[in-house]
Image (cartoon, rainbow, N blue to C red):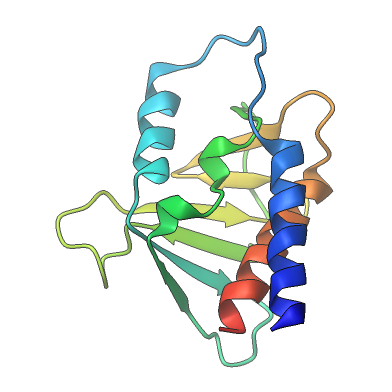
Length: 143
């Protein structure tokens, strides 16, 4: 139990470093709508590409955990052309009927949300986002 609590605290602290802070960027309305849908998703399906059995982890009450929607990220013109390491599916069809399924792919150098590549905001290292994804997956996979 102590190890799980440590991972949860570590994940929360890592996420806190990535939480949106006031900034001068103009938000794109589509991004706001997409992020609001992620933020309000009741379920998220977590997958890790290197998991030998391709185990899918479902997290109910996903809104109670830090989400990618709360991080300092912005849309980019760059394309996503790498293999994903983590795939987080908000409102997965297996669990949410009639919801808008949103797939977040996290690769080793960039991330894609519904076909749009996103990059971290100024001063945020992409590795911190990957560390967050790893912590979230490991915590819920071990439950």
